[in-house]
Image (cartoon, rainbow, N blue to C red):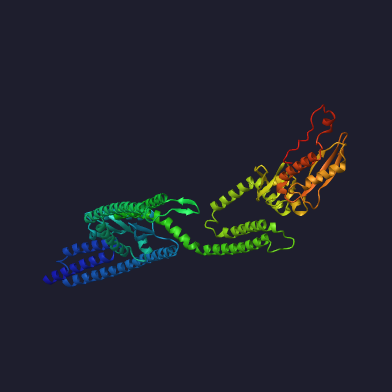
Length: 607
């Protein structure tokens, strides 16, 4: 009986182990396990009632049979669960492989969204989760890390990882810092648990840096630095003012020591007091520039001390530095173009120098070219010089800074349009000036007559010609008007073959004409400025009812003295006729004389 109880007890123990093993390895065959357990319990009840009637050997056989049946059922259930597990694992593996292949193809074109905290990129997110995009997740995670990093009571090592069936969270206390799914792990070629562990280390390091950056002691240091910078700026400002005052005193002392008046010939451009004022003004400009330079460095430095305003400091600094850098970079990049411009400029400059020398030689008469008059030399030089400068500007224009910009081109077009619309008269005068130059109707210094204006040519430009009349009146005449009017050149005739001046007198028929001719010729020869060769001659221009008209003609070579010579000729005519006792009177007056005295002046002792 004791043996039977012992065997029964061992069998019950074996059954319990079988049930436990079955429960461990068969999570999907719960119904079969329940049915088997009920049968075993039912058999136990039956066995308890039949203990007295069944022999030990029979009971042992039944127990062995039941044990074999349980073992067989256990093996079948294990086989079924293994098949089910293999099928599930195969399906999950195929799905995971498909996702990984898709992610690998997207990784080439998809950029992760960085989680940036205070300018540092901690990690990247690629997938959406819970209705939030990767961008939104990155912003929320960065905000959480930033908020934690600014806590005075922060303990960075307290960051821990918590796993669930779906996600792995990196947490601090009860606050979730960042959550990762299996897809996040696939993007990083690892599991979400490995990814969370790696990110946790990064977050802890960043939180430690932020904790040191935002600690109370660090805040006190920043305040101290801020005050030191302010004090330094104040001292620099005071030093600048002190230097300005000292330099001002030194400059004023120079008035009576080293400074001397600056003069050109007899004109004093700057006396010593004006020089002192100019130097003081320059010192004041330098003072303001130094103060401005100090502020340009101090203000960004003050903002950079505190993390909250560090980005503003960088912004202010770049506002200052970017234009300066752009100018310096533009200067460096412009150096090759500058060399090209200098080569073009100096080439044109020396060509113009050579042409100037050639024009000077022709103008002075030392160099003669057939068919090219000497008075054409300088005007032609000015025209060629203008064309060369225009050619130089056209060549230099593409190398000028900003020449390809729309603003520069627009201004050029606008200026050209204004010139073209408002310069029609100017262009006409220029063309007329060129025509007059090469027609050679007169030269500077010539005595000319233009309509009713008589005078000497003072200046001839491309736009106007200036004439000085015998009464010293300056008359400015546009070249286009001169082209449309007739011009008489007295000086050219006088230089070439002598200019003929003439005047008329009327003498009665009672005076022999031969005597009148001789008197007129003698009067002309006695006049200063009239040439003896060719000799003067007389023409009778009219035989009126009461008197003939005599015209005396004489040659002169000084056209500038023409009014004076005319005056001398008239005076000589009066003297000669008075000496001969002939009145220069109208015969009408003589015929109706009623006892009036003769018009011949009486002779004096001096005659």
